[in-house]
Image 1 (cartoon, one colour):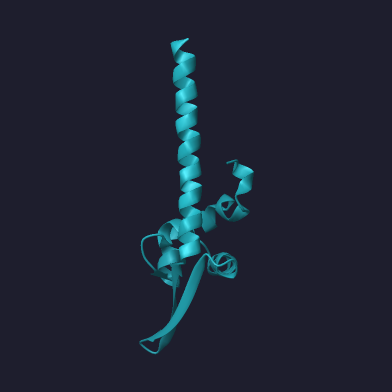
Image 2: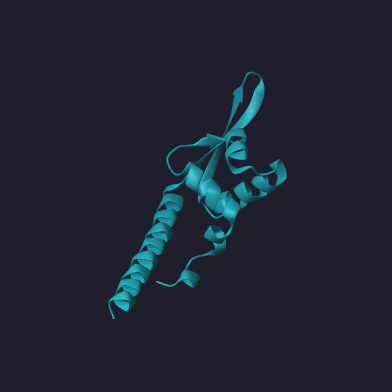
Length: 105
């Protein structure tokens, strides 16, 4: 598989960071903002993009008279992320093998 077979979701630092943080558990907007260091506007735009392609879902709730939004990764989001990580592992392993072969020659 080639890198250009992946959609550009994983080529954005912020989107990759969001997906990585949501992989194990859901998080509220404020938590994601804190962990990614993104501005409210940029984070909102990227969350919307991820939600529109089906990688994340959002759920609104009321907490202490405030509405807050929790985000979590969908199965499609998890599968796509794991496929991307697997691709990177394959590339790294391939490069390591090539390096070892060149060193032994």
